[in-house]
Amino acid sequence: MNIHEYQAKELLARFGVTVPQGRVAYTAEQASFAASELGGWNWAVKAQIHSGARGKAGGVKLCKTYNEVQEAAADLLGNRLVTVQTGSEGKLCERVYIEVAEPFVKELYLGFVLDRKAERIRVIASAEGGMEIEELAESAPEKILQVLVEPAVGLQQFQARELAFGLGLNIKQVQRAVGIIMGAYRAFRDKDAEMLEINPMVVTQDDRVVALDAKMSFDENALFRLPDISEMKDLAQEDPREAEASQHNLNYVGLDGNIGCIVNGAGLAMATMDTIKYAGGNPANFLDVGGGASPERVANAFKLVLSDSNVAVILVNIFAGINRCDWIAKGVVDAAKDLRVPLVVRLAGTNVKEGQKIIEESGLPIIKANTLLDACSKAVEQVK
Image (cartoon, rainbow, N blue to C red; front, side, top):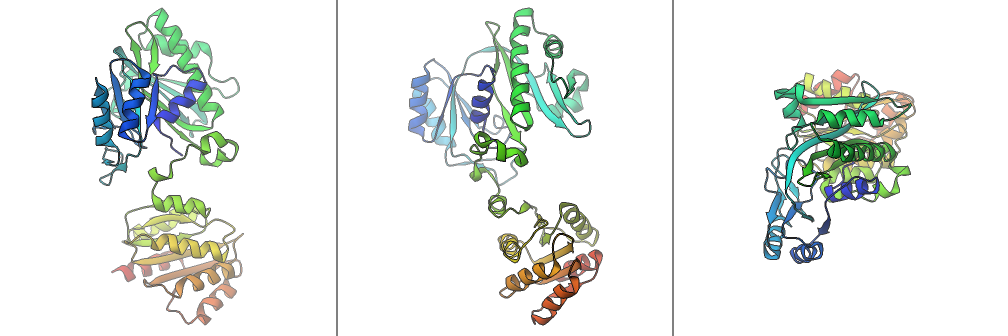
């Protein structure tokens, strides 16, 4: 789950990370009033969408008067911002963040990521702040500093100091950078984050170190114990199909193909998509109905898949273990009564004979398949 910049900064501030003063606004008038409340002579108006590279796309505007703040907010609010990460459809900006802008002398990069291969938290830092870390890793990997955190003891002060000195900071700046690094680590660890990026982390003219931007994502499986994080979810920033799927406990990811997939089990769903590609087709989605899929959940899965206008055929691939093929078959038959696209069904496992009997006796034009490759090939044929 992703959150907005202003939410990430509010969270980091609770752990002692220094952030600029700011206010969120939902209208241009609120933005102007927020600037007057904050005071100062320069402000940054930042579009709040779940995407990086906002500045390059015109989503960050520097202003010197209240009128400029209001005009900048009016330009952003209600419009779609297209960045290199959003795709051509962009993301709708429904709120902006007004922040006091002050001069700085150095930009740095600080990131935390869950390294699943190493089974550790990896801390990444660089003196080349403001750049995308992927670009820097390709063009100048020697400029990237990294630390793997031993989970038994956590990030240590000496490790944070080594990173700070490696960034070329002076003694006063190092002390303040260490505070940010340790605070950010605690926020990452305590809130079950999967990624935390402060880019840039800046050094001001008076040697303060400030998190000028912040991006965080969290493990959705841990949200049940993190109500404060769960409340930060912005459904408007998510794919509406994925938001709908979460309401029905379905694991769904929209893709750009035309073969809708309804599968039980994440591994089988991945294998199904691979086999569709092997057979010459393109999957429209990843959808795992889970291990205890009832007929109602299967019906919801059909509605979700059909909400994608690109879907030309539906492929149901069930290998029942905890699931039962007769349950799935009942859901398939109920959902297929008013279906306007071809339907290919492959059932295997628990109660498979009962499930196949339900489908055969339904009288519906359901295309039956015996193997995974057979099912995917028939789905591709229907598209052609």
